[in-house]
Image (tube, rainbow, N blue to C red; front, side, top):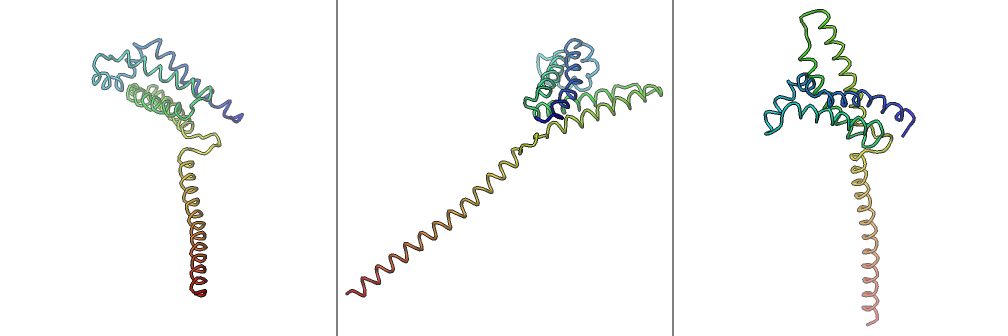
Length: 178
């Protein structure tokens, strides 16, 4: 891992780790603030309430944040944080008090913060750390297989051609001898 990634990943993850711990510790407040997002999910799953979903939401943020911070499964962690960040952005934006200038200013600041974090975790979710991604590796493997097949076919054609020439020569020699 490069020096920049060693520093950047924990810095980016710190917000999500702290938010995850707070969401778990204060699941009632989380359920209330993310109610617009959690309520439809809670209603569709039997025996699950918004408070439990709030704890799960916090647990996902905490776990993914820790994974990103230590550099384990950073792309998967970035993907999970992208989802939680998106849900958080929607919930905070829709719940903001926009009746006052101060409320609109707070809403704008929160939106910009959340969108910036969303951009960071999106980058983390596609960062291959200088190593080729799965798509590139699969494409490269397919190209190598095609090239190997072409080379094998040329070799096989040359071998078959030699066999045919040798057999033809033997037949011609046998015909000339008789």
